[in-house]
Image (cartoon, rainbow, N blue to C red; front, side):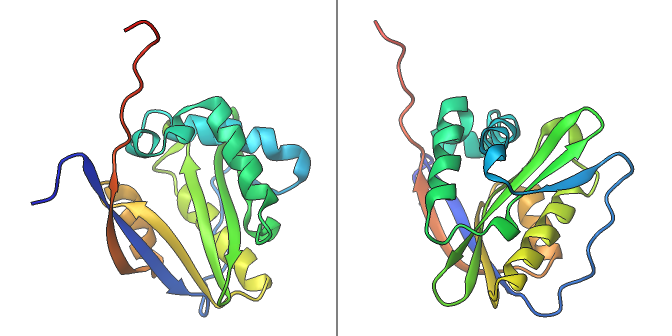
Length: 184
C-alpha cells in the first residue's frame, strides 16, 4: 500500500516525428515566443496556472509568486534552455498560458510546467501550447519529447495521451510538509 502522503507521477514520452500541423487558436488568442524580457511575465502566468492545483501542493514554488520567479530564472539559465519551445499564450483579457522547454541529452526535449489559467481551460489552449513546444523542440534537432505529470491530474494525462505520449515510468513524490505560520 502506498502512503497517502505520496503522489503517483508519470514520465511520458513521444517521438517528434509525424507532428500534426500547428493548431488554430480560438479567436482572440495568440502565441508569444520567448524573449528574455518576458521572464517575469512567464513566472506570473505560471503562478496563476498552478497556485490552487495539486501541482502547487507538490511543488511549493508553483504556488508562490517569488517561487515561480526563481523557477523561471533557473529554467532560463540552464545550458539546455530551449527558447523555441518556450511560449506564452495571450488572450482577450491578458496572458493565460505558459510552457517552457529544456533540451536534455540524447536529443530529448523536456516540457516544463505547461499550464493554462483556470478561467481559460477547456478551449484547446493546452493542446495548442503543447504543439508549439513540440515543434520548437523538433526545429532544434530533438528526436523525442518527455515530461512528468501527476497521475491524479486526469485532464493533463488525457491531453498528453491524445497527442501521442506514452507512459515510460511510474514513480512517487512525497508531499512536502506544510509550513506552519511563524509563532505557532
